[in-house]
Length: 273
Length: 199
Image 1 (tube, rainbow over the protein chains, first blue to last red):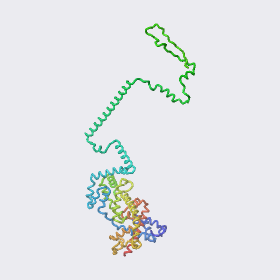
Image 2 (image 1 turned 90 degrees about the vertical axis):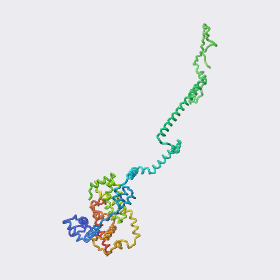
Image 3 (image 1 turned 120 degrees about the vertical axis):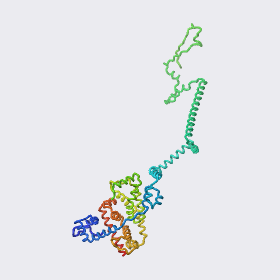
Image 4 (image 1 turned 180 degrees about the vertical axis):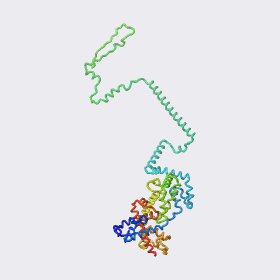
């Protein structure tokens, strides 16, 4: 840009700033009439804007003469190969015949691969993250440990037959094994119950072991720290407590052969000391 | 001027997975994009690589094109320009290193473009149509700053109007005009200096 003051005024009243603004339009032929006359008058009279107009016009003429260059022959094929994913090697061989390449297009297998790649890209990108890889690793480790604990071996899996008849056979075998196991358990329980019943019938009756237990339990819960009071002492403490005793006299109080004998029953009031 | 409806249909077909539509787009625009890249980068190899990159980016972001916001060619040129700016920034360090390694006589103030003009008998006329003159203009274009270079390329080589250039460069139209004028003037000064040297 020439070194001049933008607010310089020439004799026609146009400023250099206005001249600059009009410069492009004037060269494009978009300025006409009085404004164009003022523009040219300023260019003639201004020592900075005149040479500027000449330089800009010369530069534009130089650029006008610059012709378009021809792109390389294989450019289109390379672009198509790098964008649509068509086999690059095949395209490179066919650089001289772009029409053939464009008409051939990708095969169904290449399209399927491209589709699968596009579809799986987000999933695969997520899975490749370290935290997901760690989780999958841990899950695999857990499953391996669980299988080894359950006794599943690789050799078992290798010998596993997946034919429908074999699968059906395995199913019925497993079902029969489960039923047999259940029946065996049932028999064992029945035998055990019969033995227990037999024992109970053979063994003489015993006092129930739990009869005195409630007293012990009551004493166990006694937290008064008082000495245990015996039943007799308790009775002697209260003179008013009268115990009614009714006992038969003699070895045979009642003889069925002599029904006339009086039956005497003695009732005494006795005080326990 | 492109037919907006036809291009919009072409883009829709391409988004739907029509390989033929994409090929048509490549056929229609590869020449324009290659020329922009070649004039900006200055090298045929760089231009080829950059053109491929532009189409790869275009292919990936084709669904984001909105025909109501502007012409397809403006969208394509914007992608191209952004990639060129990125490329310029990436290779800036390499260019600085190269200039440090270059001999003093090859620097701009000594003999800027004379080494690239082999036929000294070519006339220094403003209407020179020879191949050497084209090479000289191309070399001078490479000497401009990126801001001025992209503006004059879009205006004088690609015939974009000021509004389209303003959209692509994301600057006001006044700035576009100013850059174009400064670029043209700078180019003329460089070429005048060149021919003064070779005469």
